[in-house]
Image 1: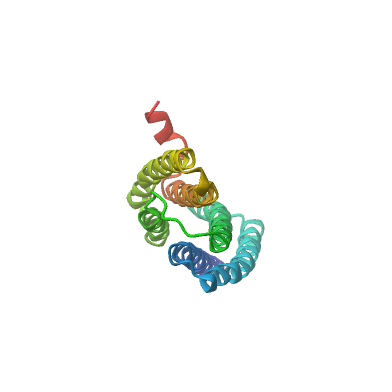
Image 2 (image 1 turned 90 degrees about the horizontal axis):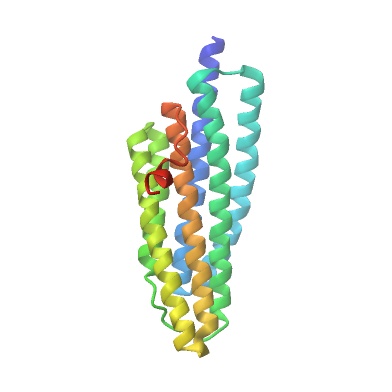
Length: 223
């Protein structure tokens, strides 16, 4: 019976991290939509959603640490709980970066609108797809899907570098739009950081399933 109860608690922990992930996913998508649509209401929603994310993070951490101290799990169960704690932190930081995009949107509403030479819609979609796939890999226990998320991070990095280059060129050639271009730089950087957190989640899923630390494998292979 104690073992059955422990497995039920692990299932509950998994449900909680999936619920947390849904909040973070919604935060990203709403923040990107707010920026693209210049929507003040969506900015406010993202800010309110952050409160729910922070509350969920605290509750999940408390449950996870209690399980660790009370049950003293071994092997794959221990790795799962440790992975959940780390994933929880990345999901909270995804929420923080979504709020950062919402703040930049509010800044953009206060100045003249200028079309920027960056496909923020494509960047936002790629970032959201990374989060969805990372969480699906957690739900299914799919290390191969988690591997693919880490590979997608390279694409977002390329988009961010291109945005950085194009927006700095814009500052040089159209200095009257420096404020708008710098605002876009910050949005691009936030999306790149969100993608990094999604990649971290995938890395933790791989650790849970395979018991392998792959944090530096991709970067080492490119050296």
